[in-house]
Image (cartoon, rainbow, N blue to C red; front, side):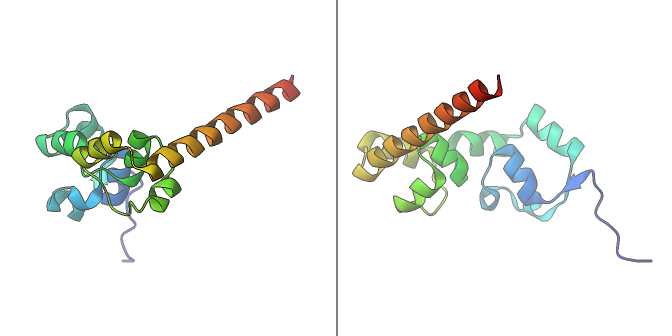
Length: 128
């Protein structure tokens, strides 16, 4: 018998956490220690247990979500000195404080998005 191949229908906890938009180190130990099947993932999405509801509401949130909630890019977060997952409370505090780096990064991110939209429109024009 060779090594058992992981089933295509299952995923690592890190992958499942990504799909659930939660920060893996903040999930329960049993979640981190198990392989999650697609059915289990679907069940978690359809009917989130209390720990998942709490995590989604209060955090800590993964960086992609923190960036989205703050309206900046992930690299903008890093430039702002945010290296860890943030809780909802910390995100709200930042939004209230509006530190200089956050204002600057939000602006530059908006410019990036606007430029992406412009290029997309130009490409669509060309394709006609």
